[in-house]
Length: 317
Ligand SMILES: O=C(O)CCC(=O)C(=O)O
Ligand SMILES: [Fe+2]
Image 1 (cartoon, helix red, strand yellow):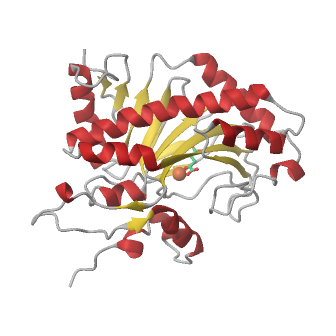
Image 2: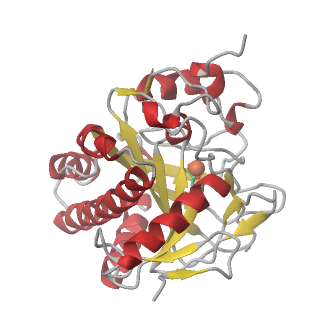
């Protein structure tokens, strides 16, 4: 069976057990759909029938506990990297609040975060968020392996996985009131790949290759996988950045979402396999975190639409 559903404009790939095993027919078929979806829309939807539903329920339940903490506690979530700590009262989106665990794939980072938020301990929170991050990292390994195999750059797989770190972001969009919006500006992510999961309130909208905004239906077993600016540069522009926004239209509802963002610690370089006469090199090697800092300090009014070209693009003569 082909593990894909094509009714949605953004392809939905069913990550069955077989599909996640390299070398199987389902793996090959899913790889083709995924690569095409990245090249067309900058991403695709995973439907994971075997995703542990109790993990989904518990991670959203502990997310609510986290946002219920006092403001004084939440602002202890600090980080020198931009958008890696507490996010609140952002001009334009005053109803949006975010918290971040940098390196959530590592148990010690989850423990550090937990003890900052709950000095007397909260093992349930720590275990839940760490299990969730580990689960998403396994998905990332499948997705990136499929990309590497499809493009004939298997050599990139190990160095990437070894140098990657994952930011786990918790987001809360408070109930929109009258003329105050809970919505985010349309943007591309600065990550390499991003994984977005929403609770039962929809809001995430993705721009398709035809320029239409597509609203994702929330469900416990599905999430959106998106290419960030770093992946676009790595692939020499073969992969498109996923342009997306959040529009919470259901009044009187609070929306929670979770994002996992992969970041490379170090340099990102376009493999030579992506470069030839028809596809001259478009991006110079760049440091991923330096790019994030450049983005953060930029005053470019259209920076949300991607600054990777102005950061490390090769200029045409
Ligand atoms: O809340 C969402 O679904 C999307 C969040 C997002 O786009 C981001 O944090 O970059
Ligand atoms: Fe985003």
